[in-house]
Image (tube, rainbow, N blue to C red; front, side):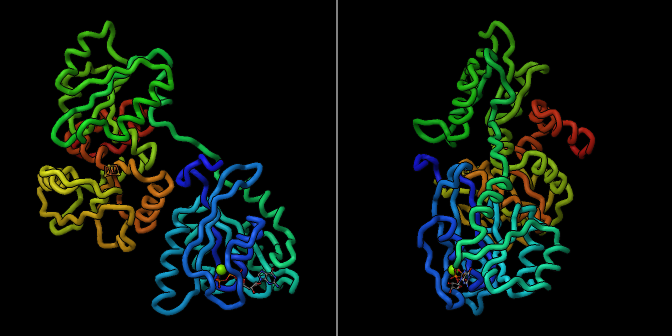
Length: 410
Ligand SMILES: Nc1nc2c(ncn2[C@@H]2O[C@H](COP(=O)(O)OP(=O)(O)OP(=O)(O)O)[C@@H](O)[C@H]2O)c(=O)[nH]1
Ligand code: SF4
Ligand SMILES: [Mg+2]
């Protein structure tokens, strides 16, 4: 299990008010005293993560957090760290004190979990003191799964674990390309080697797509955009699928025969890490942008900036040209996503190849909660180049949605 990277394990986050027994529950889950437990409210200050094997489910990460009712400036910082962990969680356990009714902060938390569609259950702890009848009736009204436990007396922990295992999201490993191809298919991958390409290697989405296509026993032909025509000419039959770098989409679309499925690495990534239908929906916002609107360009890593950098130069230029509006761009790069995104009218995210799916999903969730449209580089570039219907062709449902919406510039 040590071979399973942290980013690919399900994250179970334990949350609740201070002193309710969150750290005690983490220890009970682990069967060891890893987290500090004390009757001083606010003992846990930073998230504590521990990898473990939750049998028979498999490897998970369990996350202890600071209380959601922490106070003062430091308290607020701790709460915002906790919120971040919760947003990125695959599953949340909300710990309540059996003796008390649901407090306002706990109602807020439950509303947040419901709004963000995060799976959770409630653990009512310290039941040896008796369970408050008011709490029980509130829980009944809420209609949420709850478990009565005592960490001190190790009561209900095994049943809670079993329930968590049953409720943990089904591991749907979304393929990059696997479901679009079959054994023996010929897949042409177009990889321009220009100034923007890294020296001596291909970028991660290209490598991953090639590998997955090979795993599906397809015949992979890798070529540059310049040689695409001769490549197609050299093949006995038209290929079953062509995947290109987004920036070459128009040139490539002109060379690939009409009936042949064509898409981009970035659109494959949008589906794999992000949410392709949501990004396509996000395109609606592009044509309603106004002068002075703020756009967040989010890059998940801090790569070396090129003279004609895609996020800093090309996308702002194309968006200004496309909308004919004077837009204001902010670039956020690296592992941290801004906590406050309320000022933006649109988020344009990179492919997120360095992010775990879960972290990418947390960013998407944040945008959805704030009702801010979000797109990714590839989807937006294809749209601005008029290539969206073509690049969505392999994804029937999304293509149908696009067709139905009858968006402008289509
Ligand atoms: N009686 C009883 N005490 C418990 C139980 N679970 C935890 N405690 C006690 O409650 C106190 C708080 O426990 P913690 O696990 O530190 O609580 P926490 O929610 O992590 O608290 P913070 O880190 O301060 O937010 C400690 O004194 C624990 O021993 C339980 O089931 N029954
Ligand atoms: S994480 Fe984003 S910015 Fe960094 S290389 Fe991947 S796609 Fe590009
Ligand atoms: Mg604690």
